[in-house]
Image (cartoon, rainbow, N blue to C red; front, side, top):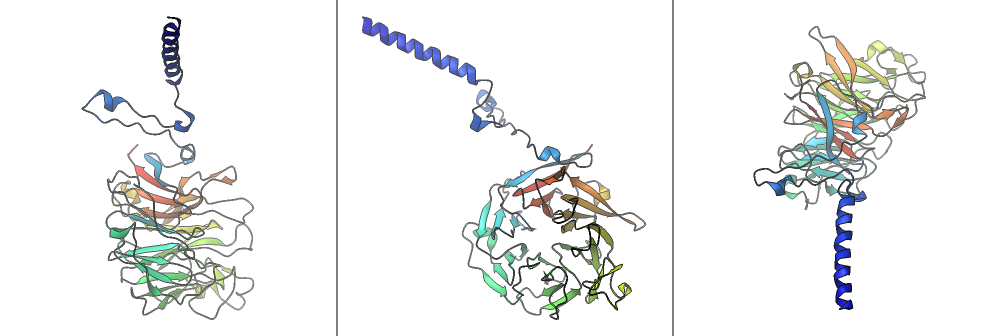
Length: 402
């Protein structure tokens, strides 16, 4: 009897402890679940599926945007996310620089968030640039362009890449590339100056070149371009616009980065002789005249690390954003007071007058950066993606109205 009573007493004690445990945990999830709560509503009713959003990210709350705009994560853990290209099926392709990987981010259910991050290739030499054409993914490394055919159907089993062109210079200094196909169906490929300031006799340096999709017919399209890591074509005029990073070691505010327009082949934008259309270089500018070169359309932040740019062609944002240019400012690296670390907007009014203003800012807080925007990509629904190679993320900016 004593043994049976002991068993009953033990059972009751276990029940009591279990009830106390449930009560003490009901107000707060376990530490590993902090910020996530699973709704029980779907179990309570057969008519609804209810899911609760995770807690807002503390960093995203630091980003300031114009009224009516919101920012969220499109994908996280995209290590060293750099330049982006969008496939016709909605898959986003992302290059990297230091990581040496290329990623694919499908969004099959079109919910504005990547389903997963798939590594297509790894161990590459700074594969910053990616571009799509006829179902093939083109990847730019330091000295070569490769092509992955029928990529959308083989994301997890990509084919062996074909070499399109492998005779670009091998210097890593400004050797990483942004690439894109132009309206003429040619692949545009820049090669930056292999230095801060220098003059190389080979015309491929400090220039934007273009080639046929099979790698033939390489020619220089624009000269005097120190280092561009972003360009796009105007939706109406089809003219090439590009950003360019100004040289270092001339002071905090000299020279500015540039936004340039190249409506035709053969134009020279000044480097290394003249900077921003107005300042002769102290070494290479002797005997030169800035009037001999094409001045920028807009002078940008000096040493702001101006990289990716794209015309806004979507329908989600208000009408006054149509065909205007969004620019990713990666941020300064050797300026006394840091600037950049934001997405800016270059806008022209009805009279053709341009303005350059911040659009999304906050990746720099009290002189300390937590993220560095690299590229922008307009999505079919009109939202805009922003890559960040420091926070290993892709953000999505949407507009829902004021």
